[in-house]
Image 1: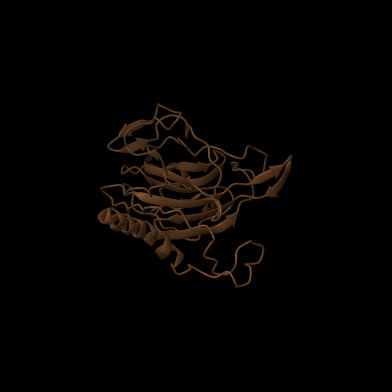
Image 2 (image 1 turned 45 degrees about the horizontal axis):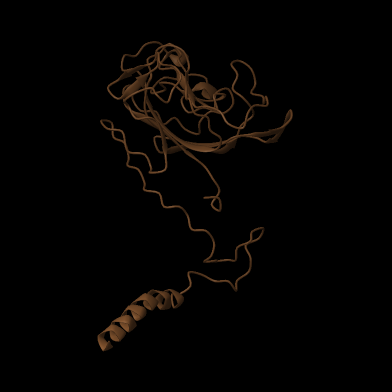
Length: 264
């Protein structure tokens, strides 16, 4: 009977210990500081929602694509075209090759982080716009130009990394033909009320790690030989790549839908 009583007391103490430790835990932050302007949280508020934990990806090399972050939606991993509408493009040696028609993602997106890798043909043909021409279209509408601009000039708002027809890139960061190149994009889609633009689109672009556009405000949808202009459209849209008659290759395509810090 005595042993049973002692055992019960020990078990009760063990069960209570975590509660005592939890109650005695040092607070993460403060509740007696001013509110952050416009928010419900105090400065250094320990009760503010913690950021989600994401495992970072790895960097690509010329021989091997990197791994995406743990929360990325992988659109092309080098194996098949199941995430894409145009099954006519070739898949070869881990790359998707522009062959016939526009390639359009099945899934549609709003604000995203986009990572995409591309390479222009090693066999150099043509000059200017006729050399390694393709394009990445945000929401299927707004074009980020793909072109072989290594020692190859063209009109500035049509070169690699340009917001086609609107803004040249800050610099020309092109690698040699046949070398893999990366675009890392932060895309903020426009919003409309009827025919009115309530918020324009914004884009940030890094080409091979070099900044080309820093939250640049877009003037509207991409046009050829016409000024960009907005036309109302849905709140989400696909990622698409252009076939312009050149066998440009793509690999390692992934997106991360963007949500606010307090909207995990």
